[in-house]
Image (cartoon, rainbow, N blue to C red; front, side, top):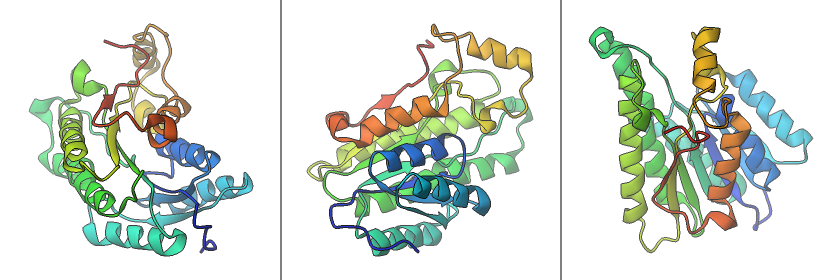
Length: 249
């Protein structure tokens, strides 16, 4: 367990922080001066590696396991963050699950598992976040640019993230007077293990050519957007979905 942080230490919880975009967000926020709680679902070794990387760079972090759809586990994660660091200033909900299938062929059992993480998980994490974030805090959810792009095969995934966007906009209004911002980041095609898995080189090349910048996004690109939204210069951005996709329309 890390030592108690100074009273002026800003503290962030990053769910899905053991790999991909979540990992880059955790490392970026640590570099920005946050103490970081790295939430993970099952890969303890990967989460511990993120913590070691942050600590090697002079930051403070620890890893905590929680199924984001389990309200008891998520409440315990937030309890531990408050007990360890004294409070919470940013919550970045990057945990997610992707399922690709034509709607007609969709396995409804897999759909339920997807929605457990992407919809119920967002409600559970956001509920704890809005109860506990300190004034000046920020909540960032993750959507996807596919909500607008409507790629075939992404029906279940895009539907789940459409729910995330709706919840984000409503929460921003429900928190009137709290001095807490609520936004969502909606990445386009981004070179993560989750995105690349199961795609052939031709498909990857086609997707990379879609943005006017003619490349895939990187986890670092997305982490920079999150850093802005939870930082002092992002305080006037509230109730928005930021489509971080290199200009795909």
